[in-house]
Image 1: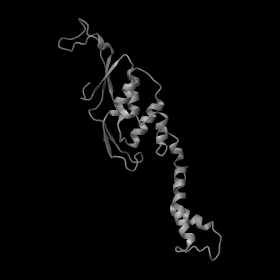
Image 2: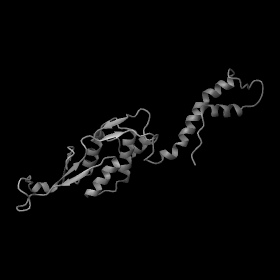
Image 3: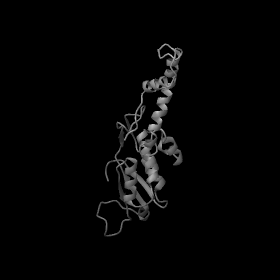
Image 4: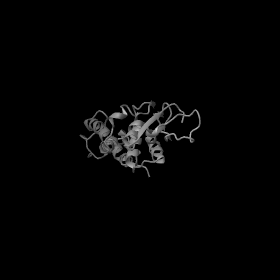
Length: 201
């Protein structure tokens, strides 16, 4: 069951109906009671709307009004992620951090990136060994045992979705700053992570 939606006119009428009856309590639009109700009604309407949105705001995946509270709890917005992110991208980052239970495997990083809104693959490297590599392939030395590569589209486009976007959000945003920022923060300390945006794996 959804919360009822009341307009400013509904609250104005309710305020006027609570007044006593009599000549000095006129319901005429030019009278003082009407004008006072006209001033108070928008405040009551905003408060009712905020109360109706409280259930949605209580969950990070649908929050709007309480998004800054969720972000402050998780140390967001992260400076390395840049500015101007849409509401949806900010919510994705909050949800990804809240649901992150750690890991260092390939499936973990792919799933974490998906929670952020990025489709990636991961390439693992290994040192070259005589007889194991084909002629003409790259030679990787011993340090490459600790190198891995995130493969993502050259430009990740995030389009605004009806119902998820907020007034003032951009229709589209481009970039992979959030992906790099979050993956680097979770990469095992003894490894080196590379980012490949060529579309090749």
